[in-house]
Length: 273
Image (tube, rainbow, N blue to C red; front, top):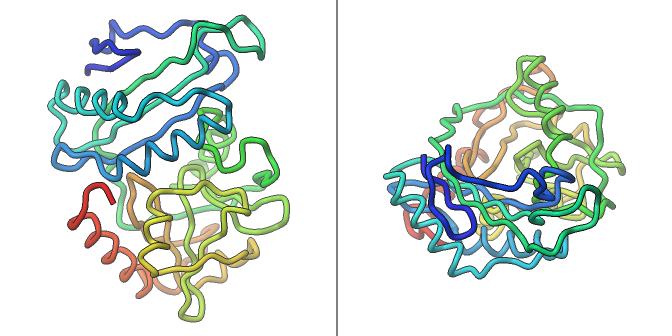
């Protein structure tokens, strides 16, 4: 596998990041994961705009969009990637031990991998650790993922594929790497950004397509739903089969099917909506 690091394309074994990079020392960095189909990355503009927003939230200077697009194209071509995923990571760069940043500037990495191959439906569990919707990191896609690692391990231990978080207000928030949509009484609802959830690219596109609306939801709304689904840039729309071991009434339900169809139609029409 060839990886792009700060302007240089290298074999994985030769790619180098400083052991004093601030992302390794403190989790100081942001990232984006994009889906690749037929050697084309989907929704690049939106991912780069979100990378810039996340970088601004950490006061990191964002890389020029043209540079990232070129690096992305180089990585896809160098790895002869037809279908898979690409990851763009921007870190605080080499730094002294501690919380202060160094003066060397950010590290930019573009890598790729095989498709995730998610199943048609996922079992989820609700974990007991709430998101802090008032956190300085709320809504930012940072590399500080230890909380998600712990939650996902809990889900795996309970035979589920994804873990779902509430927030400090007791509202439904998001998954470890997903947004959540709940179908109830013929309405399709998803938590607002004020819940602390990430502004997922797939989530935003579905809202723009008019298939769902935002609403604050009690944490219990997920288990009480008629149907529900997860979204992410690698999953697209994935139905939820059960919550904490209890099956939902429909999987996939009519709202889930309609959302999935609308999203696939969009993907077929426009690779960079």
